[in-house]
Length: 252
Figure (cartoon, rainbow, N blue to C red):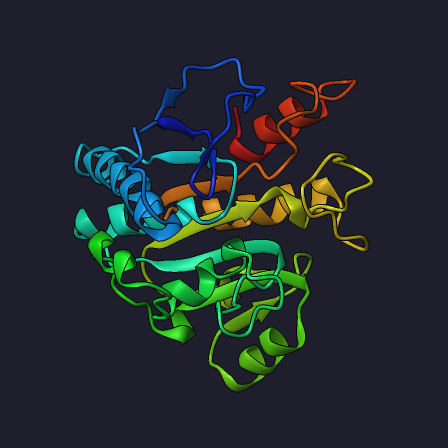
């Protein structure tokens, strides 16, 4: 398994983004243009897509660890470029199905799952060559914190839903899978310092078990992990919470 670190939040490089990971990790970093947000992210995600595609073509399963969930767009694009038509299993406390038109905050990090379903917020996104994935091949796991427009969209869409504890093999879309895990899906009492903590979540153990049920299918083509914690905090919390969580999640 190849581990790729992408130390960015949207288009912002995070010099203090350190993974509590003892194994070998390759960093993907780019000189981004002096341009708008979407053009800058397109360059970054292109670099991720190229690296992921190379790994899959070489017969490896890449794992991408990043500072947000938008980098998953580059991971999915890379999977597609390698000729793999993957469905998506998306663990997240949030829905990530906003649009820039419905979002009251205007935060671009709230849209990636909607982008995978075909939403395109800016022409610059087209540069990635990302192909839309049918809604019924997208599975949102948890998604306990939804804004009204997100709830309305999900109620009317064919996007699948599951609680962490209930997730079983029969809930998964068919075929190859892209597995994405935003660590904020775990209750923030267990993993303090998250950017967008959402109370009332499942335990870390429950999330690890559910992720392993997905991995055990043998159908996961690539893994994306949103390490969405505050980069200005210590590299790890007392007791090595983050290191232990990543090791358990990724079986390392």
